[in-house]
Image (tube, rainbow, N blue to C red; front, side, top):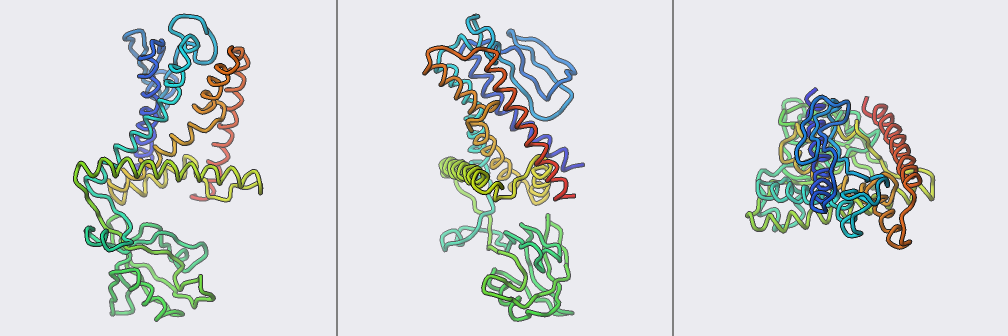
Length: 360
């Protein structure tokens, strides 16, 4: 239940941040914002101020902004989206994406100041890091680790062989113990979500150079903090790297889908994101901040893609209107957005079903 509540709060904040970008840009451009809703209808209550209805709705997932004439109607009416200048329309369309990116920057700046857990791969980071831990990054399918129930982000503290406990302070310590005891049974000590656990583990005999006795990838991690002024530029750079990486990821998925007919990646929908959000929250607030920043950048990248019903698709229509010197008919524009919306809903349903099968 707590996972569901955290997920609803996170998604609501991210969507409201996005919609607030559209809201403020439209207001600044002199467009009439008919409604700014928290959640989705049916409406529970609302109040009107400055010509805008501020509503609270029953379905608690994010929110929406309704701009007068945003779907191609009332193009010449004062205060409508269609009557705005080209640059005003572009600003309104891209403002949601920009707000999601800036929100991620803010979270990463705050995280760098308060302290983020990062991988230690060089001497400078190791010297600066505190609270060092050996963490699991990935668990191979059908491996001894998978059978034992090990999960990514678990902290390995050591192994037990009867009454003997062998502590592990580095990934090398884990590897040496695993290879020295390959083919035997042991107990692995971990910390998950702040709680220590002991799991029985079979250490297999490796069958090749790419197969280890456990079936995990590891990293030494630590908490690294920076001054407030250094946190600013580090937050900006981290968000930019995230944006580029996610953009490349979407391109790779699309390319694989066109070439081979499958995504070539494990794509998660609402259920998968909710599960991961719960895991991040249980591990700690800083992990949750990092995860929310990643989702925020993901929403920014997703919305800027040139697909109907997304901000990127609307941007294409605005650009086409500028190049043609006249707009598409309102009926055609509505049909394009409606088709895009239906496709997105179907994709979300398909991914959600896949998530349910995978996680439950």
